[in-house]
Image 1 (cartoon, rainbow, N blue to C red):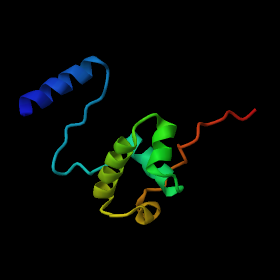
Image 2 (image 1 turned 60 degrees about the horizontal axis):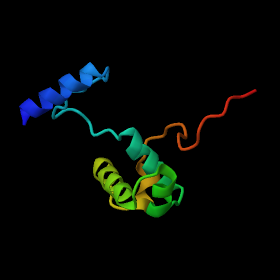
Image 3 (image 1 turned 90 degrees about the horizontal axis):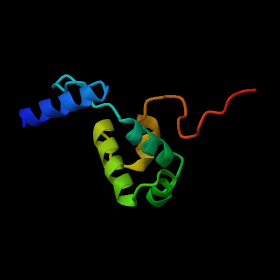
Image 4 (image 1 turned 180 degrees about the horizontal axis):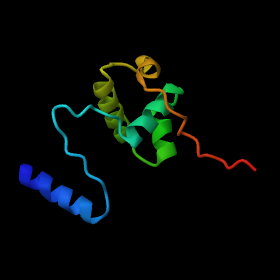
Length: 98
């Protein structure tokens, strides 16, 4: 398995991506997609509504939410808002001020 991980790291570096090596001390940080889905869920959007907005399947939304719940050590949507780190709202595109 380590050989596959190294190959993936090499290929990602070739594309210009930055690769973080995961260790036991590496915290479980939400990916951008997980954070976006979690924020939409805290606003009351259903899996189907989130899926429609992001052009993904409701099953993919459920998958990401299950990962979010595990990373944040929670087990329901009602706990999401309190468990999410405070960040600027990234669910809406930024509009330039004119």
